[in-house]
Image (cartoon, rainbow, N blue to C red; front, side, top):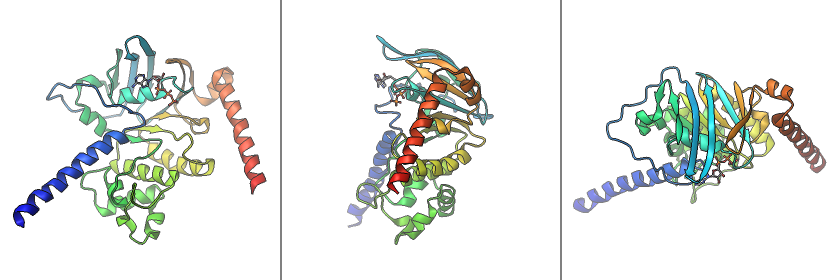
Length: 304
Ligand code: ATP
């Protein structure tokens, strides 16, 4: 029996590792509907994050050589600052995030974190430094506690609960009969879009990364849940260098800089106030969304 048990245990372990690797890759998106293609030389030095400055320096990129996607994109996220990217579907917003995570290599130009070209450090250390809050959090078929703790190796229950509190999901978890041992995922308790995102947020809080990528939800959340979770996201972004792929303009108002993308180019940039004053594409988008929001709340009032 012992002879059989041991390999089975080992298999269980391997299975968990393999499954996590799979879901982890999957979790990295949304941003990543495909596998990383970067071959890496062995013994690359680890990224050293000190201040947390991110620089895109004249970056051009194509998934396929005949179809350029990004054209000479340059921006800097100052340490602890936030750059928000807005623009139409397919304009290249998520591609920026994929490149920062080094799922693809830039075609020309470079991306630097604290002065280190990301091609010259190990991808593992790069991704270790970046927390990602995706549009739709993918959950492991495991317990809630495991799903949050996944953000950090060897996290204690106390740290997991602390992160859940900060993401305002602790009360809900505590009200479930099995609490943190409650299974989630396909075969477990069903969570709403907002709850899933809070879980992803708790995971990111626990990871405590110096850099953040936040891929804002488009439709997973209603406006009220979205506003509620925004406060926690803002708190997480304080003192962290953050790249926001923004779908709703209401969340970019406080960004250090807003980039407006169109077909792979930055067509406008500035703070919210500057862009409104320019009275260009951003100002038009803003007015449109204000109108939509007003319509939505009128509809809700009527329905209530
Ligand atoms: P959305 O707001 O709809 O998410 P986006 O601005 O994030 O759009 P990207 O996902 O960056 O847009 O895509 C930019 C362009 O690159 C699109 O035209 C898209 O079709 C193309 N693209 C994305 N991924 C790949 C890929 N793996 N291979 C080829 N083309 C791709």
